[in-house]
View 1 (cartoon, rainbow, N blue to C red):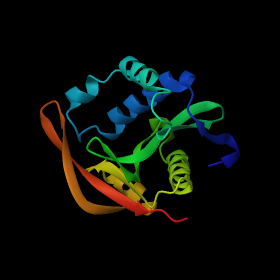
View 2: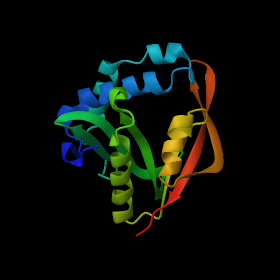
View 3: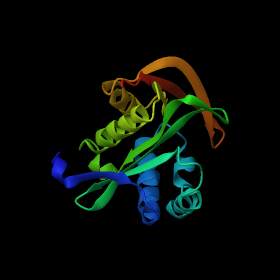
View 4: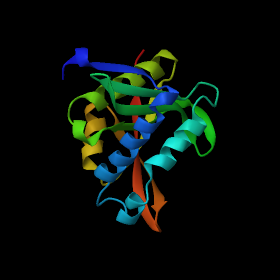
Length: 176
């Protein structure tokens, strides 16, 4: 990857449509065969973009949305903030999402977004970062393991069109 062509920056309102496209296409690509196809087919870029626009600028600033621009085009998105234990936020951090345009898998964009999230959460004083990953998503699990995350034994399913899909929690200690 040519680092001069990549820019990680805070997401702005104008990025919502592109971020929604990356997220939906990312789900449809990465989760094919892992969650019901009917669920993936029902995903809507327009609905997702509206959800991003509605949430944009809300909250207390503890949730951070980043985008990765490659040659001026948004090609990735990450979101992170306080760890959520149910509806309660804890002192730990959570990586809520990292998605890259499927045409750019393997280019280092996801890694750059992840490093920025780790740096940010360390800088604001978190000691540990958690994330959730589909149990059967071996590609994503390897990605996170290469970045120092380890499965901590916690597993929870989420429901997609009546099917329970198991997720594993991964954790990593953040170093000052």
